[in-house]
Length: 105
Image 1 (cartoon, helix red, strand yellow):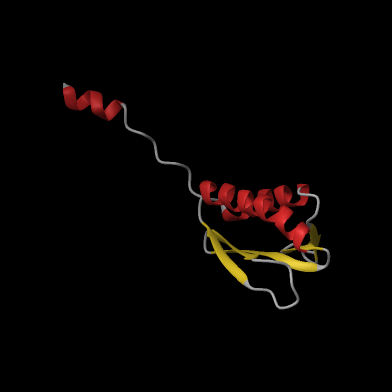
Image 2: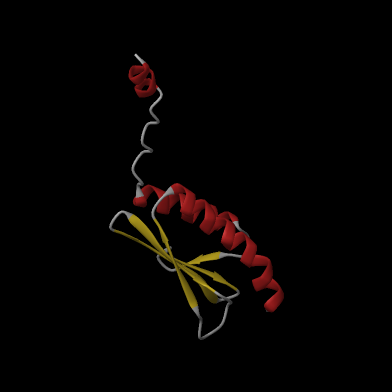
């Protein structure tokens, strides 16, 4: 009887990560951050003409590259996004870097 009670409280698995839909949502969230401007085909975002974010969907994940600081020769940090929590962390990281990028210019 005790084993049956444990099975009824099993936590369901989270839904699989939909990279294509999440990429659309991520682009929408980034467009709302005012200093960022989407450029080209929408896979790149800029601050004052300097590329700071590059996005690509591949194999059930989003490959995101985030600039350490805006510059002509940019140093990139890679952020593979494979679930909703990683997506939220990436957007939070961008929000934290935006004021720093504005000060540096």
